[in-house]
Structures are given as structure tokens and as C-alpha cells.
Amino acid sequence: MSENEAQYKKMTETPIPVLVTKLGIPTMISMLVTNIYNMADTFFVGQLGTSASGAVGVVFGLMAILQAFGFMFGHGSGSIVSRRLGAGRLDEASRVASTGFFMALFSGAAIGVLGLIFINPLMRLLGSTPTILPYARDYGIFILLAGPFMTGSFALNNLLRYEGLASRAMIGLVSGGVLNIFGDMIFIFGFKMGTAGAGLSTALSQTAGFFILLSIYLKAGTQARLSIRRASFTPAIVGDICATGFPSLLRQGLSSISTMVLNRQAKPFGDAAISAMSIVGRVNFFAFAVGLGLGQGFQPVSSFNYGAKKYSRVKKSFWFTTLASEALMVIAGAVMFFNTESIVALFRDDPEVTAIGAYALKWQSAALLLQPIAVCSNMMFQSCGYSLLASATAVLRSGLYFIPTIMLLSRLWGLFGIQISQPVADALLFVTSVPLLLWFMRSLPPDGEDAKKS
Image 1 (tube, helix red, strand yellow):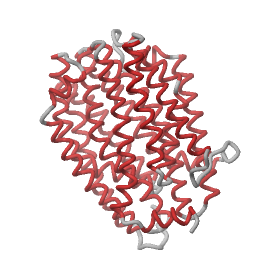
Image 2 (cartoon, rainbow, N blue to C red; image 1 turned 60 degrees about the horizontal axis):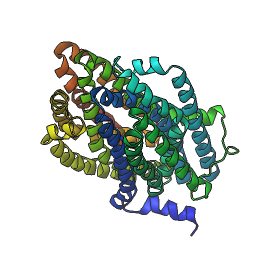
Image 3 (cartoon, rainbow, N blue to C red; image 1 turned 90 degrees about the vertical axis):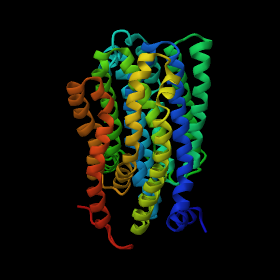
């Protein structure tokens, strides 16, 4: 049996709980390590003062922009690659993978150049106050310099996952995460570089992770191959990648816009409010990353089996992933709910920051229970090529629900409105996602038949 035949058998015949868990655990580890080093930045920079701590939240919006384009080209090409492999079309898979990878590199370089030219206006746009701006600028410069390596790394990671090689994808992220934690200690405190040290550490660790992931392709350890000669920037391929990956761009891009709006709405309440909400966002996403990691193990299973016309396995993998993620969110939410003050104080020992953050974290920890079904639905729509449906659900949480919610509630109830805006947006998304999910499940035909997208 050839390697390709063995991979096909693995993806279409392995019991769903075993397959999703096997692919999901490396991704969960990757997500946790990634978030640990993001939280390490928050922790170490928090020792420098409240304004410096607020800079982390501002630059997080910039990193979300880079992640948005890396994810668009990674998820877009990865989903197509997985379906092509499921259909046995290896040459097409290599063309799509190469095209998506180089598009990610080009986009990261463009963002880096433009961001460096307009660094001060960019930091203000992302929500910097005059006191936060110097810290955010020092941090952001290095992130922009590493732009192409960051977008390229996100793309490579997702391409590997969609091939069912989650354990190899984990290597680059984990290596980068470990390097960043030690780099923070060395550059921030050893060389006394402050927030610039945090930025340099993140840039170097992301670059190292990029080359580790790229080496997996250069050693021909994958079914799809990467090379500039295989890249095909035709309207058909580029359009397909962009259409499939557009939900990721919306999801991550609107996350950046949401961070910007959050910071701007928190401005009237001072640097402590910006710092507190930044900490809450990082902690909440750390807990959510456990379920999200399992969901990303589900994506290649759903796309591969959809391409192989095994729709019953798509359904089974969705329900297993959703229920398992829900169980994990119950545990994570409970731990956060009963320890909010100590968790926030760990990152910034400021009574005002702790008071604001603890209350917001309590609400967000309860709302974790609403997220698995909505997020897994969005992942399934995208993995199966339902770009319009995936784009719509991606827009709802970060854009059409969150942004108007925080602007309205902050105007009505001030700081309290800011603290509860994300949970309210999560509740609205849950209510919207359920009927869309039921429609999608009913639209899937019996195994072996062609699916008809409307």
C-alpha cells in the first residue's frame, strides 16, 4: 500500500473519536503553547507598568491582522488541498498549496512595509492612548519586521493540519513558543529592552518556527509539495483560495477591528481599563484554545471526508468534536469563574485593573459554554467549501454582533457595558448558528452522492 493510499484509508476508515482526537491533541498542544507565550508577553510586560501592559492589547490587534491573512491563505488553500487529496488529485493539491503559501508571504511583507511607514497612526488606530503609544510602537516595530514569517508560519501550519499532519505542525509552534518565553526574560529584563524586548522575542521566535515548518516541506515529508514553480496565480486558483479562506480573513480581521473598537471604547476609563480587558481577552482565549484546538483537528477530517463523499463521517465528526469541546469548556469555565481576581492579579498587580478585569472575566467564563457549537459549525462550513455560509457566521460574532453591541452597551452602561459585550455577542451567535447548522446537516446527501450547494 502506497503512502497516499494509507493516508486515504486513515482519513476515511479510522473511527471518528480516535481520528479527531489523534489530530486534535497536537493542535491543542500547539494552541496552548501559542497562548502560553502570548500570556508570557502579557505577564512579563505587565511587570513594566499599567501603560506597558495596555500596549500588549494594542499590538494584539496588529498580530490579529497578520494572523488574518496567514489564516486566509492557509485555511483557504488547506481546505482545497485536503479535498483534492480526498479525491486523489495530488498535482492539483501541490499547485494550490504552493500558491497559498507564497500569497501568505507576499501579504505579510506588504503589511510589514505599510505598517512601518505609518507606525504611529497605526498604533493610534488600534487604540493607543498617548501614554501607551511609546510602548506599543516599540513592541509593534519588531512584529511588523517579522510580518512575512508570521503569515507564512500560519499558512504552513494550516496546510500541514489539513493534510492530517497535525503532530508535525505542532513542532514549529511549540518550538517558537518555548523560544519566546525564554526570549522575553532575556530581552525584557536581561538586556533591559522593555516592550521592545517583547517584540523582538516574538519576532525571532515566529521566524524560527517558520523555518522549522518550512523544513518539513523541503524534506518532502508531505503529499503536497511546495515550490515557486508549482505556484499558479491564475484567477481560478487564486479566486478559489481567497473565497474558501475569506471566512478566516473575516474572523481574524474582524477580531483585530474588535480589539481596536474595544480599546477605543475603554479609553475614557483610562489605561487600567485597556490593560484589564487585554488581560481578560488573553486569559479567555487561552481557555477557549483547548476546544478550538480540538476543532482544528476536526477540520481536516470533515474536509477530507466531504471530498471523499463520506458525509456520514462529516456529521459524526462534528457532533463528537462539539460535545467534547463543550465538556472541556465546562471545566475551563468553572476554573476561571471561581478564580477571576487571582487570575487577573497574576498579570498586573493593580487593584483597579484587577477589579475591572475580574468582573469581565466572570461573565466571559460563563459565556464559554455557548461557543463550541457556533465555532465548530463555522469550521465545518468552511472545511466543506460553503464559503458564503462560513463567511456569514464569521462576520456575526466579531463584526455584526460584537462591534455594535460594545458601542451600544458602553454608551448605555459605561464600563459595565464594555465588560458584558463579548458574552452578549456570543449568546446572539449561538442563537443564530443553531438553525444554520440544522439546515446544513439536512442538506448533506447519502454517502457516495454529489453534494449540491445552494
